[in-house]
Length: 329
Ligand code: IPM
Ligand code: MN
Image (cartoon, rainbow, N blue to C red):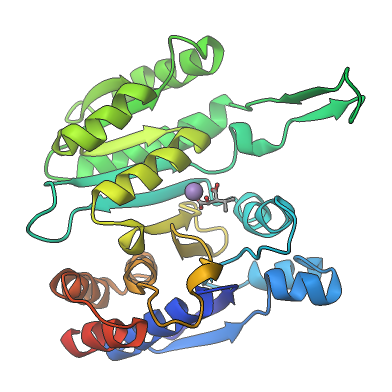
């Protein structure tokens, strides 16, 4: 059965890395029925449209979405982030953002960690506003939304993942000593759900300490569960530690499978290097491997992951790296 996959190349290096990812998927023998969507900065600048409702509705009927990157210097901050990326995450209820931190290369620290980032709440929920804007008495508030349901489903996903792994350990990362309301909800939820997973050991780190440990002793982590904003920051840091952001993949998952999940590299559109052939496609390739895995194409997913590991020490252009992985698959 072929899978119906929406492809959003997006802006900057997005289309370049997505092309390599699709090449590798084809080499792995998986036939995708792809539909291209022209979304991102270029469409916005041309037409003022970010994500028309009809397009969202169509995407909601697909099996998966592969996204390169969106963002252009001429587009004001927030337009594409809130209007496209976050809207897709929220409306498709992609409540887990799964980000592997996987060291590749002999000279890198031993890190084999999965970050489970809550993806539909927290400070990303858009709660807040401004008052008396532009005056000396301006007020801006930006709240963090944490619901029991939202926290619990994310925490439960993290426990299930930890249970399936060899080390069976889960670390909650938060800032419970300062964010006492949200932190208390997260900690109590972890404590309560942990009773259902007696084989999974649990721990807790404050987010500032977790940054230090990620750099100094990243092998201490197996599965990390954390809120939306902490997860955003931690996975850029973790990506850099694990070999560079050019390798960092992510899966925005709807674990209930009531609609498509979305797979994208952690990196952005990098407009400064567009067209130079220097963008690393491996983060996009790894994201595509996560997509194959979620679509049930587990053998192909494993072959791609293995080929990426073998190719990750190579250097070359975007296309050469894509070819190198495709050959090894
Ligand atoms: C990411 C990105 C996004 C985020 C931005 C572009 C909205 O940084 O996927 O990590 O903050 O989640
Ligand atoms: Mn980010």
